[in-house]
Length: 585
Image (cartoon, rainbow, N blue to C red; front, side, top):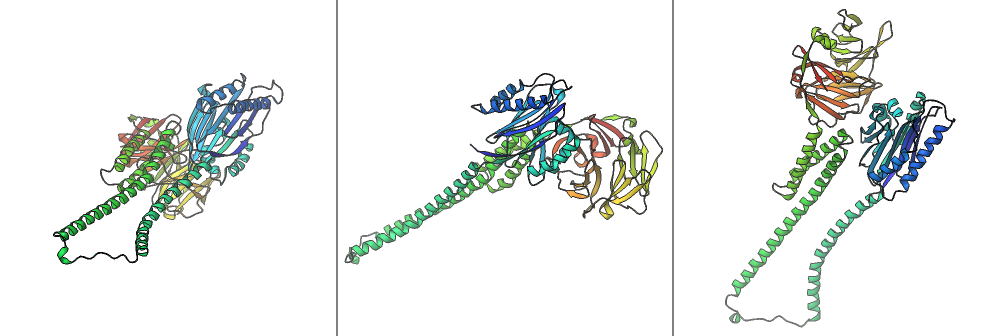
């Protein structure tokens, strides 16, 4: 069995009279917990004593298990749950690693996330309104996965984009040290989290290290054996001449030669040549077959591993599952040209590729939506876009904003009276998008490859240049802002910026690239980013790390001009063909 090494880093807030939290780790078992009571009726350290008793019970139940699997660990967790009295609000998240399998359990509320490579995704989540049933999940881990167990309070205080930025630190210990001040600023006693770094064990690596030399040793022995054969023949020849030095070969007169001897010699030569040619041909075919087997072993197992990883993640995180399926497809597509038509290797690769393509299609979540025409009053933003000539538009909760060659204007919701906010004093000439953040306009200035920020000071708008580094905005098409700035480019890429610096970001898991994308939409309150992909007639949804979440197709999207997303209401309004439509997500 593959062994594993786990490293832990912990984040725990200070307790209060009504709230307490803690994290725990021992061997392959780990947990995060918070307890909350409604009044101060019990003794001062009641929650502290209760919490330690719960964790101690979990430890005893777990380490007395003879067999550790999902069912037996679930029994241990449920036995531990009996220690939690009525009237105590609990967020109890526990996990265990057996081999390379991760088992997760949540009592009450809480969340478990995983960072795999550059992607952050949710493995398991339980909310307060979902009842008190135990939620559980399991799946395979990969080398250097980081698993984050979060109490409900931690998940509420630290959003995914913030967490991902801190997890980019060189170690989980440094990540927890940098997160700790943010947690203590909140003064929420229910905040706790444990970061778990998984590394594959040494046994696996030693196994790999042994296999390769054995194969090389076998080849070397075969080569030595081949070299040895002619040497032995030569040795036998030398031995014969030295032992029998006076032995002479018999000679025959021409008259004693048997008739037909020449024909016999020629026949023997032909037979020898045929045997030699056959052996050469066999050796060549064997060499070619060995190459095919080696090539197959470098393609098929790697693709099959990615496919199996995707299958194990389908119910845990569809985005990560889709990434694994796409990696498997790339491996197979790149490698299949190596194998001749009709070969057994190609047939196996094509069979696996068919399964991978089917899995990708199932995970695409391409939902065909019927668009319903609605009155202009349902979307004041799109009604304004329809009736106003401008270079770009944006909105917040109270106003619609638009930019022209002369200035930036605002229009209160439901009003027809515009207000000039900023006059264009040769500040911009080619606009690649407009967005609003905390009432301050941000403009993509394509001609100068810059984002212009007009800070609302209350009495005026103070201009400054947001970006510190050089960028290329020649293909900039739109901009949106949450806590970060995202710029959509006409070539289908999205660039991300934070505090004036570019941040690594890419779209992952799409079944096909963006084609003619024109608008990007998000806000600090959104969980996702929405992209209007006109060329493919769809709206693509990705999370804040760029990983594919869903896509929605509709016939009106091919001619869409702009769109407005109401994520909480699960609605999207679309301006297409001078009409406003609505689709439900």
